[in-house]
Length: 414
Image (cartoon, rainbow, N blue to C red):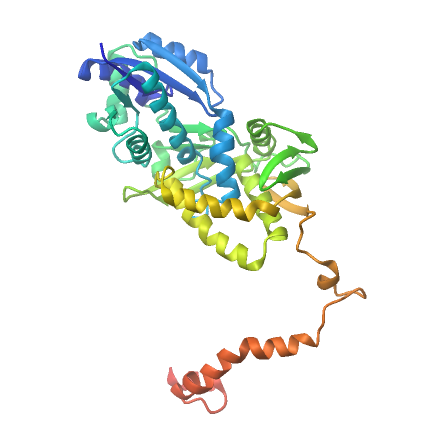
């Protein structure tokens, strides 16, 4: 019998999908569970897939690849969708799509499947990535095709004795990997409602840990990539997981955001991203020391485009290759150390140093060691302002009839 490889998370959508695919398409299901820092009992999830009816259940440890090839490039770029979201879920999708294709080839499968709905962003990310890497593979999306509500899915699971964790009393939909955790549905769909404390799993309530004393961390970067924490060298995923625990204990990394989905709707999303919050702030602080004003200005433009590209599912595109090449070029000298203070609900940059620093104390100081040529500023100001004053004299001032007090002239025209 022909087979399909299903990206299996163990949640409601993919659990009911195993049974539904068999009924609808008469295909044997191979469940593929990928560890991207999910912090769950993956072996138990794999066993559940077999219990539901999967003919084979595979678990792949993708944490190292996820960190090296997806998280670190996004960190180097400074990618934040709409200036807020660190893109945890969006970053994992192209890796999962690639592994789906690789396993499908190895197993001789005719199709791949995922548990995305018809109104989310992930369906775009999966489908576009899979179609780019393997256009011959059929894509099955049971939840999208079935058009069932979560209540319907829960009822279907109960009817077919499918073990799930979601209930009508706890309707939250979550996704997590080592770069962040997302929570939606239920009361969270009301953007006026404050998120209940029960939705948070990685971060303590910053309003209830008054007695917790601040602590300091030092993170070392090499070419824009963090390589050690408090002097201890770590593998990438270990460093992120450690930071998630340390910063999460201070309530750092809670994000409440109404974002614009790719499919055209606004969605209220709750995120927890302790490590991402700290590392993005630290990386930005080090860049402020090692990149020029012009590089920083243009890199901000690139960062926004890079984030949009990730969010929109265009990881496997020529545009991504182009932007990534620029980002890598900017990181040549982004090496050094950053000191961070963790406090209740926030992290503060309190120190930074680098052998490649563009900060010159002799030019910056106002003390006796000042080496800046103050007299040179006069000529600079004259030349810098020359285009403005020329245009003002020729066009702007005559157009408003300015003859003396500009404020008084403006008031008379109101």
